[in-house]
Image (cartoon, rainbow, N blue to C red; front, top):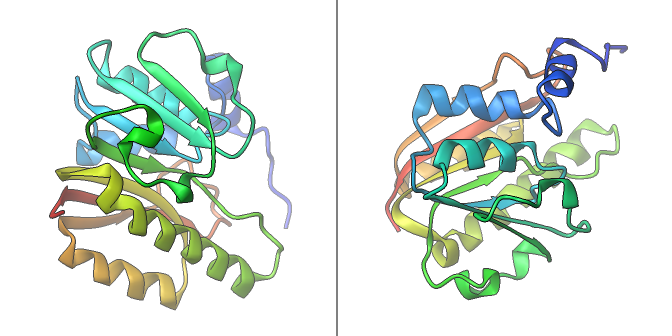
Length: 197
C-alpha cells in the first residue's frame, strides 16, 4: 500500500527544523496527558534520530535535563544545549542511573523505539512487544516512584494483554494513536502516569 512519505507532518517537521515527524506524536501525548514538566529529568531510550529528545528539551526547559541512549552513533545535530547528554550504548544493559553518569533516577522515561520490521505482521508485533517488555524490565533501575512513562507498541492481542498488566505498576494507564500517526500504521502509544515503583 502506497502512502506519501512527504506528508503534511514530514513537511512541517522540516520547516520547523525538527529531526523527524514523530515529534508531533510526543507533542500531542504531552498536551493531552501532561507527561513532561519544567525541570524534569528525562531518559529517552532509543532516541535516534532525536525528535523526541528535541521536544523533551523544550518541555523541561533549561532547568531540566534530557539523556538519550541508542545503539546507533551519537547524532551530533542534537548536541549544543548544556542540558542534553547522549550515549551510544545498549539501553537494555543498564544497571542504574550511574550508567548515564547520573546519581538520581529519572522523572520520565520515553521511548519511540521500534524493531527492524520484516513486513510479516506477527513477527513485527512480537518484536515490538519484546522491546517494550525490556523497557518495562529496566524501569525499576531508571524511573522514580510517581514518574511517567511513554512508549510505542504495535497492536496485537498480546500487546493489549501486556498493557493490562501495567495497571498494577502505574496509577493511570492510557493509550493513544496520535493524529500524526499514518492511518495504515499499527502503532500506538502507551502512557503510564504515576509509577508505583
